[in-house]
Length: 67
Image (tube, rainbow, N blue to C red):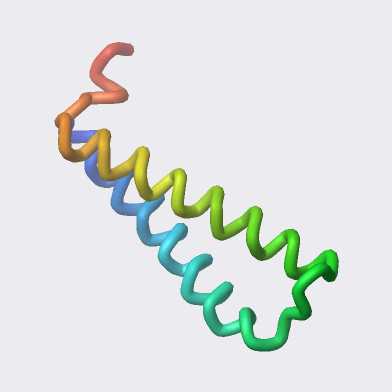
């Protein structure tokens, strides 16, 4: 878990940054436009990655320890 935790911190940081940027751009997006669809898909992917990162941290799975 010693190498996994720093990688997860970077992943969580990048996903939070993307979600903050999406939150700032949300008022300027028109529902149904291409930009809106891309923003929703990106937000969904970021939330999935945050969930996976939280699960790996919670179960203390050493992702890089198997190699």
